[in-house]
Length: 529
Image 1 (tube, rainbow, N blue to C red):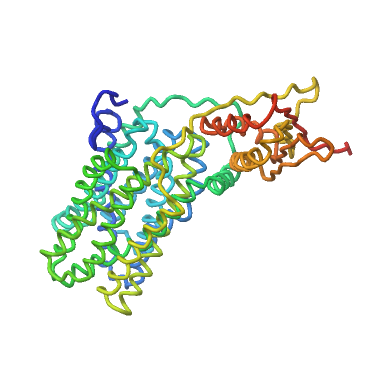
Image 2: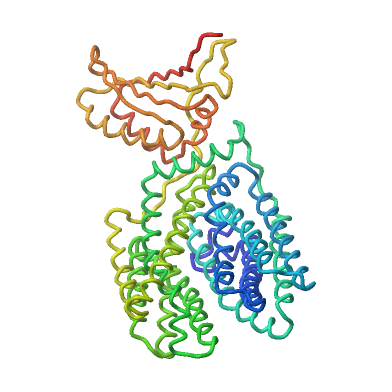
């Protein structure tokens, strides 16, 4: 871990050896990925494939993220995350080897290229939620925003350098050489993850099934207003902001006949990400997260709108620089918050849902603004997108970014029931009805009901599929909270899922009642056949 006496700054996460080494390895790996993408597109064209096959290359790369994201997140929370990352890296390296060998041997076909591209991207899609969930295990909580920004810098650098290198290598040595370099690019990450001694995670309950874990992920997001707000904010902002990247090649074509023009604009966007990461840390030291994020969105919207009236490389290049800086400010803050707001047991799944929303906004926005540009022109499409980005700032009224995140460390304090000897329930036995009886102070009843409604959301978030609170007609001060859980093991998991932030809610609730609540556990009873 980074030393606590090192002044906060954009580079402090680099003091953590594992993070620093992984970042370097990731740069090489992502450069190889972009080289493979360029090589695949060029190879498809070289084989004389029609526009449909060329377009399907991008589809084969993107589709796995929509197909596998949620189950991948579920698996990432069930199994050892280190092993999952290692296995997926081996899978991608193996597919890359097959692709390079077949290409060098001259056996590649358009259909085979699409299949191998899909298989390669499938490994990336399965790995990504877990990879992001690991970050809070590597750096301190206060360094998450800076670490997320550095990851953004790394990705944008690889996106700017990888395609350029691929073009030169393909011109000199052919597509097969680019594919071979992609194989080599996996070695750094594999060696580092293989040597990482991740602390063993102890379980007191059996692992969840993949289906159950996916259901738990959706339920957790549904009953977590802060997470829902972040996802809404990110998805809508990316829908409008996607126009800038989607239309950048077309903008470059209008100001330069050479593909170098597109490379320059993309490089300026990536360089802007570096500037944005530095500026973000200085800004966060002075202003709340919401102010910084809204400022980044405002600058991004203005840059997008201004780009609509720029028709020279000298004007577009600095505009892309500013846009890249604003882009990374918003993305880094949102990513860091998502990682901080989700507890460890569900983090990979929550990040998978976030990835679906985020990538969905980018994909839908790119298609929409591409269609708009065809009808009304690139300039008007960019102007409309810029106005849309600015309009999303209004979402702060309903989905404001928290300046401080809740403590999501485990807080298992609930007393287990004293089960009658010989009546221990089976783990899969259920449903289970839990009742909690409260003696409420008469003059605090309304406050109690408001607090218990908020606590009911926590019960649902952590596993209850039905919840309610009832007032006793024969005893005006007696209130009974009830909730149903699918099985006994799922209720045991509820004990593990409580967080330190929930402790504050419970302590507030106790100020409205007298004495200790009376808790009862009832399991569904059926007559023997």
